[in-house]
Amino acid sequence: MTRITVAKGDGIGPEIMEATLEIILAAGAKIEIDEIEVGEKVYLAGNPSGIASESWEIIRRNKIFLKAPITTPQGGGYKSLNVTTRKFLGLYSNVRPCMSLHPFVSTKHPVMDIVIVRENEEDLYAGIEHQQTDEVVQCLKLISRPGCEKIVRYAFEYAKQQNRKKVTCFTKDNIMKQTDGLFHQVFDEIAKDYPEIENEHWIIDIGAAKMADTPEMFDVIVLPNLYGDVLSDVAAQITGSVGLAGSANIGEECSMFEAIHGSAPRRAGQNVANPSGLLQGAIMMLNHIGQTEIAEKVQNAWLKTLEDGIHTYDIFKQGTSKQKVGTTEFAKAVIANLGKNPSILKPVSYANNSALNLPKYKRRSAAEKELEGIDVFVHWTGNNPGELADKVKKMENKGIKLTMITNRGIKVWPDGFQETFCTDHWRCRFKPIEGTEINKRTIIELLNNAVNENIDFIKTEHLYSFDGKTGYSLGQGQ
Image 1 (cartoon, rainbow, N blue to C red):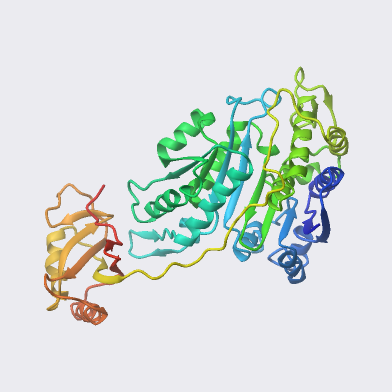
Image 2: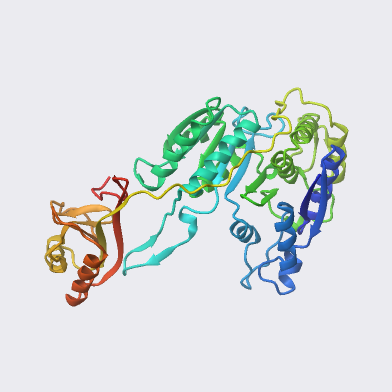
């Protein structure tokens, strides 16, 4: 028996939650429920996060959180409960199955059945941004080995539990060789632990094009945060059934399961809402806690109900649908189909009562780290890189010299092209003179010289190698 936390949410939330719980309990789900209040009432009571501290304690104690959609009031500095929950609870993996329900839901991709596994905490979504000059702002793309290992391990474990055959990784490591390169490297390392599952890597641009055109080529796709955010919406849209999709957010300690649609307040209290999205989230929850037999029974009953043409208003289509039903009646139809399999739609089969094996990240022994130079970013409004080089060379000291200047990642000195357009944001790379070593005191002296020469340096990045492997981009352009 697993104790879970349930929030019925706002708008249509209470109705679809009641229907969802009725279905999974009828199927034999071994759960006990603690209900909490989140969302609009909590916001309007003066809590800008939409959740009380005692509710956090219940979620953290039970570890499993099934949440209906909520309404976030407009204005007033209210925070997104979804974003807050993901960050506070370390929910590193966003999982979104995207399956075609042809011919019962219209789609151009009738055999599509993919799962997007998206890293949920880092990448550009760390939200670390700075304006550095009049013309340039930056956003830091953070990719960590722990983040990569956790999300890739989850993707393979999910594929194993769900009896899926292939995991595909999408990155842009032909350009971002350090950040996306690490994601790809970790993918290749972990794939070796799953020889029974096919693995492949695609560059994100052609991979995205292929997914949108021929999604049947893919099975499970694992991606860094930004790419995953974009492609999970694309994948859901091209199935033709965004309103029927569920989502899971998985952490090392806690996990949250939900529908991907909103609270639809205009439909509240009318017994017309489709509970399928939240039901899909609940099925993912059952799989996560190892009650895969129950999850399989519910999913196949749901597919059989759709196949029988028993549809709520949002997917009802004359000639395809046979009976328009409300929320309560749809739930009862699914319950009546428990133990039955669809005959047109593909029935699901999960690894029996197998919870996902997700070991906690273990930090590796530290690499041999060697300081090899420094990039000094300079705000300068001139246009001639040679003129800037003459200026910043005055920063040099006995152990270190200027070797390169780039602008927006393109080398402009030495041997740059005069046609290259330059902003007021310049990266000046200093490296040790051959036969000498540098340390952080050398760098302090370099920056002191910059101050003395009235050079407006705005940021520095140390250049390191790790176990002899270069840990920085060369900046020669793409």
